[in-house]
Amino acid sequence: MTTPTHSLNARAGRPPRWLRHSLILARRSLTKTSRNPGAIVNGVVTPALFLVLFLNLFGRAVAGSTDDYMQYLFPGIIVMGAGLTGLVSTGTNINMDLKNGVTDRFRSLPISRLAPLLGSVLADLIRYLIAVAILFLLGTILGFRSHAGIATTLAAIGLAVLFGFCISWITVLIGVMVKNAEAVLAFSFLTFLPLQLGTSLATPTTSLPGWLQSWVHINPVTAVMDACRALLNGTPPGDRVTTTLIWCAAIFLSFCPMAVWIYGRRE
Image (cartoon, rainbow, N blue to C red; front, side, top):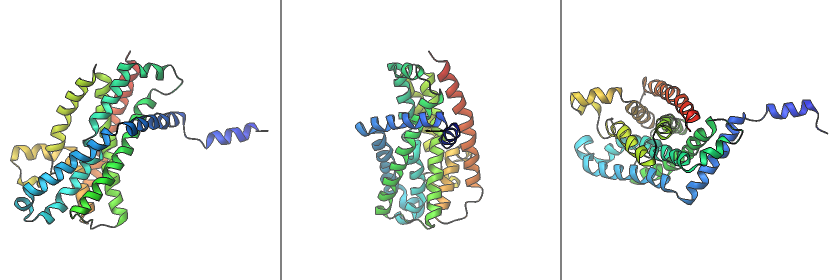
């Protein structure tokens, strides 16, 4: 017979309800992905195209050789694969659940308002890790070599994935605010195109025009790309890792509560 004390101890060892519910809904999202793996394909194909295109177009002009340019370009491509190219699917999936009535079923259940949103983002986290693993394999084939130890390499990947997790909440907010999936696509494209391309991805910041440098310096994606580049190439990252973590905290604390609040109030 189970005693009350034993029951309390068992509950104490379990994750909180909101996390358990989020993980269940993340599994639901991953099941959908297994049937239609478009988000993973997009998260790999788009960065891979940028990698091959930029490597052959700018390799000799920027770094003098494609081998040296590969060491510069690839860390930025990892950041793209760790969230930036698959962000649209996050907000779109949430918006479609709202439109199709799936969310009404969730609201009829005794679960946290956070769970459907966090579950979708956690599923994206798994997709980002798969995309990064595939991109690392492709980068190795094309000649990229990490000059850091395993722990530092994993730290660079973790930093990129953490940033992808935090910035996903921007598209979550867009997904719960707008009325249809087409609007999510439009707003997400307008939001993330400057974040993706207005960075140090393809060329060092010092080689850009002055007006563009001003944007690149304050772009949070530049901070995470430079941090991952330093970590993977075995150079001192300076304050880039700290800057990235500050941006991650600021983005998450700004957009996550707002998205949950609007989601809870949306009819």
